[in-house]
Image (cartoon, rainbow, N blue to C red; front, side):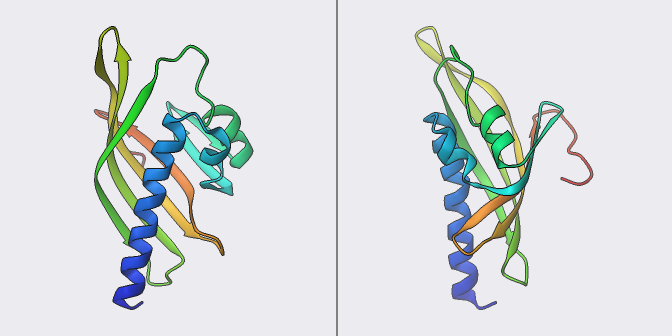
Length: 140
């Protein structure tokens, strides 16, 4: 893979990582779910959601009454495989929530992602969320 191709892929993947945060924070469940492949797997809080529709129904829709929140992501590492069609990424995050007159960090951890390029764009094939203090699963 040439340097320009690699740079373009890394940029597109970093955009995907940011779009995830914006879609979730803005409560746009359809846009959120569209970032995943049809057969994607999403693991968080000990549970597994399989497929775009299940991710939409269980992760992409914030619970009613949840206070507004915002993702902050940093320290992303992106590795595009030699085939140029698959990649892995690791991104640290914290999640801020409104509490009273201020804000608190309600969660922090690392995203472990496996990504694929389809004809339209890069998408998540799997996302494993490992919270601060947890050990990542061996396959993350």
